[in-house]
Length: 538
Image (cartoon, rainbow, N blue to C red; front, side, top):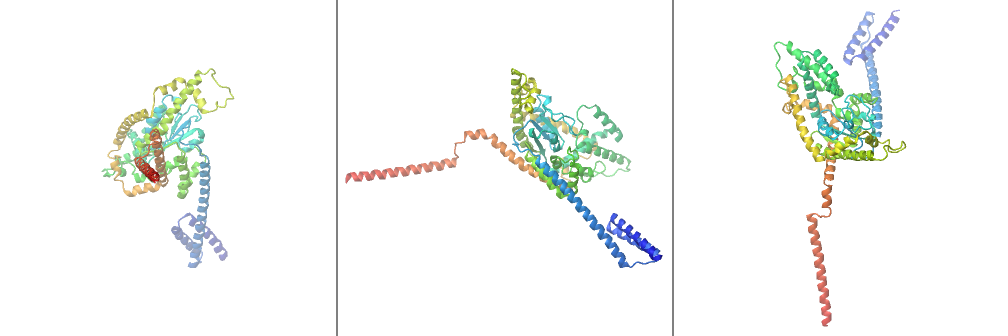
């Protein structure tokens, strides 16, 4: 009876110890299992040999380790398959046409904090200002419009590349601007705090939230709180700012503030804490790569969240995403760089701006011909009726297209208008930024303040954005090629004039060669003449 009781109790102990071991870490579970075994067996009057107990625990540990390793291996293999299938399908969808030609729809993939707002306000709105119908209704937070509108020529959005699944790919020219990842993280951190600080005018968070909801309900345009990724980042920072302000008021005496703007934890969330927060890990880090690949948490593609989760869990799988993102950049009409501001603006004007101007002038001419034509419409069987250009001509009135041509817009005029617009826009943004940051004084985000950020924090940001670092280097190469191509294209008229003009060095050697030949011919003629004269004398 005692033996049977001991065996049953031992089995129960073994099962319990095994379960607890797999749930806890090795060291703690070892102690708990030892105590459990010792207590139970001693209470029954039996003392188990220490060697047997250690062997039992070792067996449990090995079994759990093998099971965990097997589970991890299976999970990695599943993730690897998922990511590879997505990458293969994504690469197959790429359009294999001349990327340098502007198609019917210009899609501006606006990566946050790259200066895209400047391009939109000072370039795109001026180019497409002839008619409001030329610009697609903007939606930075999912689509709230029909992207297949026949008179839609410009789409500017924070939506990621997955929105291309809703657009006619063979008629869409994507473009984007990238920025040094380190600077982009700094700017994202600063802007999310800047916008959130505007709400500190309210006495508490509840009042600020209620008021912002009312304003957004009445506002006709798009609010920052509706735009990805700020709809996640600003409320997060807003809640944090109010919590820190409340904590400061309760402190007596008040704590001494740090002299580093990026580490004033009593006023704002320190940068180091910010970059390690789960929200930042999900949205901000490698954000440009995920956005170009179409894998943000705002993606329109089914299954994209699973792919992103796998890549974030297993860093090595990020290489597949990087390949897709690089391929997407290769197929873009224009890839600008924030740091190369002047060169990017000039290239945009000559590569994109010139084609938009030409496109609108062509539409203007075609629309006038259509209006003046004897027949108001073609037959239903016309092969041209389904083209977006034909439908575009029917949608745009002659008045709006003539207005575009009457403006005599040229690349030079576009650049002049851009520079004036940029100057005004920057002044407005600087004033608004100053007012917001005054509410969190003495914290002040400047280029000088960034110099005081510890090197370890900078290295941490870099390590968290490996994919973006690689993509940015690749974009620099694309930009350099596009810039050289533009320069050669602009120099083409001059090249025709000097096409047959040899360089100075070549001309010199040509003259020497011809002179030498002439001299040899002359000597030969003299020799021949003397021989003939000698023969005559004889």
